[in-house]
Image (cartoon, rainbow, N blue to C red):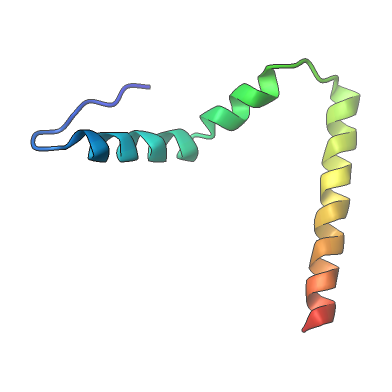
Length: 65
């Protein structure tokens, strides 16, 4: 990834634009995930856990309304 400074752009604006690209491309999330090896079975288990947690969260929100 390469970000070049535009004419008249301040350093703060350049950093803000850089951070937006990093967040949009999920670079830090991908980096953190690849720091440690996680087996495919463990990834599937985590995916199921997240799905269950999200399902419960949605049910709780619907019950409150």
